[in-house]
Length: 213
Image (cartoon, rainbow, N blue to C red; front, side, top):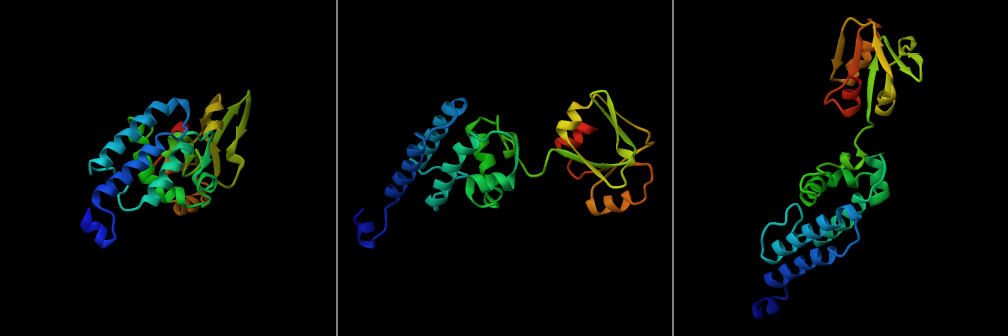
């Protein structure tokens, strides 16, 4: 302690105590009742690990300001209501349209750790990278409320939301084959051919694409 006092730097013991204090203080933050006990337990584990010099990943020992940012953000994420794209949610939560995306990997791990794996992505909270939809083109008809909507009369591709797909009473097609196209540029070029093939633009198939299929 005397050596660090001469150097004008905090001792490792003091740094551990300060770090542990961050989590002890955060444990008192209000979170939705559904996650109250999980939050308390998670903060307690982090406090003990920090005090003992053990891993607190994905939090960091070297940037207390970042830890504060994450600890303030997590309760607001747990309270997020409804579906929004990540850029909008980031503006609301971080006052920066890109910040939530920059932190998403760390946040996803934190959410998984505190919920014991029940939440493992922002999407599970309703914060989406892309809309829940499918981009398609071809001879498709959708029946809703007893009325048929014929998408084949449209010359360009159509984006259907997952909600509209879920509410469809029937979906049919006269296409002899369905072609999944990974690259969107290629997809739009194939659309121009009006080949009668049912084209679906998808790389990794999101929930909207899976719902349609």
